[in-house]
Length: 112
Length: 113
Image 1 (cartoon, each protein chain N blue to C red):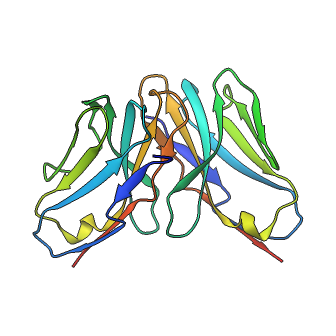
Image 2 (cartoon, rainbow over the protein chains, first blue to last red):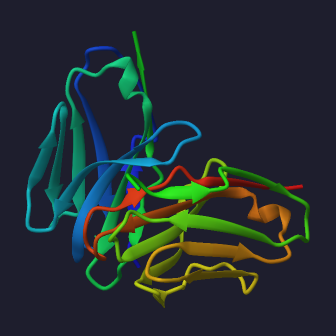
C-alpha cells in the first residue's frame, strides 16, 4: 500500500530564505507526482506535475525534483515571500491505480 | 467553465438528513475524483470516475455514501442519513485523463449539527 510522508510538518522562516520541502513515498511504481498548495479554507492549487520519466520541473521560483528509485521528491522555493505562506501537499499516482495518494502536508509560514 | 466548480460552497444540515453535493468538472475532462478533508487531517480518497463509470469506489466510507456522474460531466455525491462524523470539506478534482494534471475545486464545507 502506497504511503506518502511529508517533512517537516510545519516550517516558519523569514522572508527571502530559500526553502526545501520533502516528500517521500514507499512504492516507487508511480505514474507521476504532483505538488499543490492549499490556502486556509480554500481548495488545492496545482503547482507542478512531474511525470515518472522526468527528474525535475520548474515554474518561476519553484523547482520540484523527483528521484523515483529512492522514493523522494523535493520542492524548492527560492527567495520566499509572505505570499508563499500556505500548506504544501504532494500527491503520487501509482501505476496500478488511478487515484492520487496525498501526504499530510507541510504548513509554511513566511514572515516579513 | 474555467475551473472545477462545486456547489454549494457551504452546507449546514441536521443529523439524519440527506445531502447532495455537486461538482462541475473542467469541460472535456474525462476523469473526476472526490476527496474528503476532515479538520486537521489529510485528503481522503472517496471515488474516481472515468466518464460515467466508477472503476474505483473503494474510499466510500459506508453505504450511506453514493455518487453518480451523468453525461461524462457533472457529478453528484450523496450522503444519506448524515452523521456528525461526516462533517468535513468535500473536494472534487478533474483531469483530462487518469494520469494527467489534476485540478481541484474550492470544496464544499459540510457541517452536520
